[in-house]
Image (cartoon, rainbow, N blue to C red; front, top):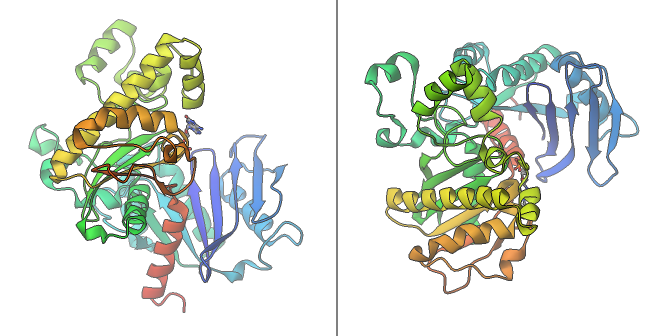
Length: 405
Ligand code: AMP
């Protein structure tokens, strides 16, 4: 069975085609600058060189046509006809309270997705455009929606409710939803496998540290808390996002900067804050910051310290939330590739008996236990794989629905 995974952003479209019989990726790529005259595609057939060329893609539907052409091309393609694809899995950022798991997409689901747009005005519209474009181009192909929020729908009320007037939750759905759920689900399950323990016995904190960062408390395989909230702005500081701040800062800044709340939240808290803002604009990339700190840049050092402190503080909070701490997992760009940041964080966790093995901690992008045998908490580096999780969910759901044999 071949499954195509699609992830649409506002001006980009990422894809991966899987052969699920062997669980291998046949090709992947992305179309960038969708909607602009200089759109281009980067196509990577497995085991061969990547190919980059300009395409005309005024919208996601046109971008998809180029993806289909690349996948079926006689030279750079990996299948001879699109009919070889059994189903499409779509990444959807926000499923609200309607979706606690992945679903087969039909007209009713499309309507429910429309209703979720309000909750994620930046993220959901391009995801939905991708689904609509696929449905128009391949009307008979089963499609599955896999939600970033779904894994966190198991949070108890005490974790997802904000201390705001209750009617704001009832009327407008103001609550913590959490994001990166597909990644937290994948790496927490892998951690149990690597440790040869049933996930039902483990209390794990998963740290997805990338351009956007979030942590989750995964108790016995179930998410019971996570740092991102109503939107992906809450929690630890990120590349350009502030993470937790006193909400009164927003109205204070509106007055001082003579900006609207939307301008402050989008322009400042989302785009100019985080480690970029803290470092005085040095960089939002942790590689640059680590180098700058080594070169004596004090604000770069401050940004790294604030980040490590806040991540460590949440790990402590989640040990309390779960009543135990068996493992800490590092994943995503920083978590997988920065031994320095993993060390900065774990150094602060001595109270839990966390002990990193300095040599094992040197790994980058490799699945490995990086703590010492004596460490009271296992620490792991686990490369995330959201796409394979989407492909697996898609295969499982279309099979169960009898949509494919
Ligand atoms: P992601 O959003 O998961 O793709 O992560 C992207 C981020 O990972 C980049 O912005 C970098 O800050 C960070 N990153 C990638 N490689 C490294 C590295 N070798 N050392 C430190 N940070 C890294």
